[in-house]
Image (cartoon, rainbow, N blue to C red; front, side):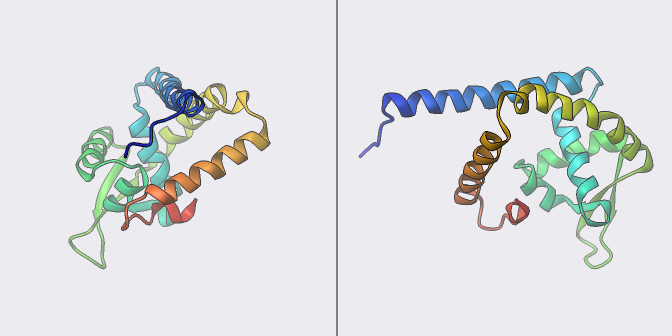
Length: 157
């Protein structure tokens, strides 16, 4: 039996979906003006926050909710710019970690204020702190309920 959405649920769902698309669009446009995609920025940001400034490619794919192949393509574009490098892990010669180069760190420091301002313009400026915290808590429940069994990325949320 299909559990159809009632009118209130439908309005709420469509607002959530449209808002998520618009928020992403605002962030993409802000970074695009600097020749960087949101996906590229996100990878660099996640790697920069990881212990030791490096992260396994597989873990990175889980964290940004993208296929390993897509993350690999993004990493290749960043490598060509000299912003990241892939390094074999000493513990497991098959494993590969991504790490920022000094140039990549400088680029991330240049882009971070642009990204943060786009997040504020697209979302934070329109919610009270209480609304933001409540919304974040609700979405964390959704993430935990829908994550893959092998996905450890949400443990840090």
